[in-house]
Length: 337
Image (cartoon, rainbow, N blue to C red; front, side):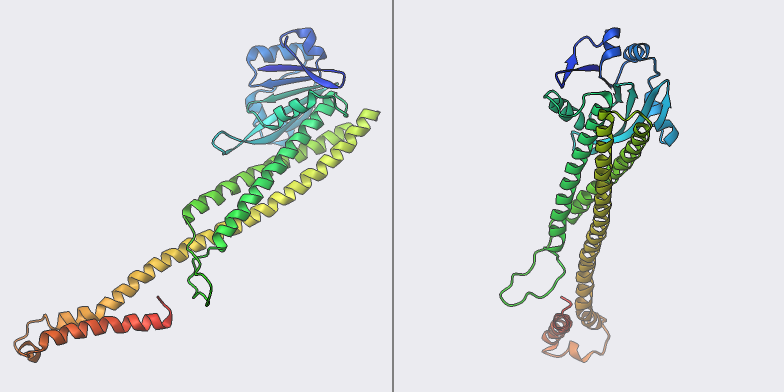
């Protein structure tokens, strides 16, 4: 789908005649979402550039993502979004600047695009040129990234409370205190932490690619004639770089915290499993002496005094009960139960 945008009184305006060659050559922004071969040919004919294919967008080397050709600057960065199932989706988006026109090529739908379009339909204080729209789009992307990282931080903090505030390490409760409860499904918490770790990793990758793209943009703008609009764009790019750097640092902090939580949850699961094994071990030790007594009196030797004794059976039962209670009492006293 090809969307064509122009400007009117400082506002972004969408044109309906997207296939008009004359309109394509004067539009300020061409947004190509999963473009067809026909739409690619129309844009190439109108602007005199080669539209990169989807395979070329996914190449990771810097020379394929940041370059100039046919008088246009081609810049590609990975943008991330939450899918319908709340799973992160990362896909490259290419931004092309030729003169005062911006062309975007994407095969997924980052939320930052519709958010910016809705805002840009109102009068804007910034210049509505190709460079101005590109910087505004990146600002919207960075704002969305900040919102996502804030949400991840809240989830990590909540998970941390569930893991540590309800720790099931068995400590004797002090007088007047409630005994701490065992946490709910640790496997569920482990999966939750893992999902947020995967999202944070992809977000960090996205911020790195956007940071490289912004640095490339600054290098291009530094070589251009410094008009009033370009000076404003240069100042906005510097602010954008600081924001990206701070978010990258915050994502690194969250990654470290998530790694710690993963280790902690795995440790909790190991402790829980050890507790189960301890119960079986104690049970085996407790029932070993009674089994030994029963084995002795079940050997059917010809000369066993207790076999003809009147109180032989009660004596054997008493020995088995006593031999089971003594280890149990000992383990209880040592705090192993």
